[in-house]
Image 1 (cartoon, rainbow, N blue to C red):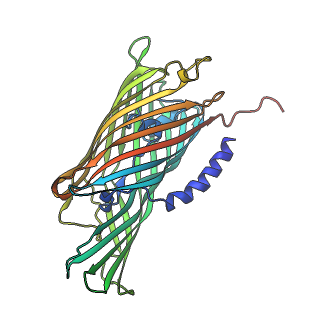
Image 2 (cartoon, one colour):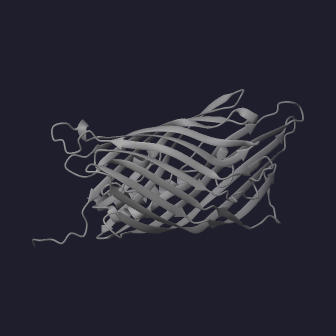
Image 3 (cartoon, rainbow, N blue to C red):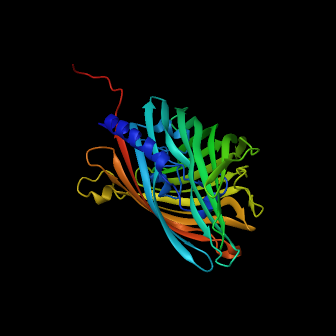
Length: 408
């Protein structure tokens, strides 16, 4: 059954991942767009905390986790989000539905493998700057696209307490932008269209360790490092005046963008299959992500950082009399410095997440639901603040593969 679900989901989501607009943030104009969370909904509902060596939930942030899988696990998730975008004088609302991830984990004794598809960044904005004064310049900017990653990883259990792992990631995508400018009172207009095909490879390594503190309590730790890498951008530009296209020559045909290195450390304490409280800290360098069409004198980049605390609670995972006692309840808080500085203002993201995992009776599979809300940016210095509310849903299917039949 799980194999049929995987094939159907892969065909559908491979198409949707190219067609979707994954963000409605005006800040996605910069760099390669708004960075997307690169984990499952189970971890996102805990603000990104992912420190436990789980046997039935896939952790795609740290490849060392694959070695702890007890069953073949297929997971897929998506989000419906609303944004209230406001400046110091006005506000507007936007909505979008997004594909978040598709991944498969396979246990192989002391080894474990994982592969899948995850959006890395998204571009999606529509900005108007209208000047009704005679002779004033009216501008309309629109962008869409983003970068996805396909990953393949392998984990190994050195000891019952200690895992290591590594994965290779192929990043690819397309970003297109359109700018229309017209002068009030003048019928002619200029349209500039830019398109960039992006591709590149990077690597990630990780380790996880857990040990007993006492009879019930466990200590969990996680560390993973993503190496700096490059994205090759093959770009083109077309300028149309009054609908007459004229492809501009002399612009760079190929440009190289730099994705910075990133290190993430997590630690937590808890009782297995009962509760967990943990924290995650991440730091990332300031990459070189500007293309020729979105460079700006008022924009620069700084080092990214994230601080999160979260956890889960299960009243009684083995209860036969109460279904609600087997539900996993999750929550988390986060603070992120996105690494973007506009008009000398750091663009920060502060949010809270809540979630629940509903077990499918008679199996180790589950359905997960999550809510995330918070704010990003500021209305200071002529900028905008986004108040967001996201509703996410995921499915995690578990099954045993490669089991030798005992009967003909």
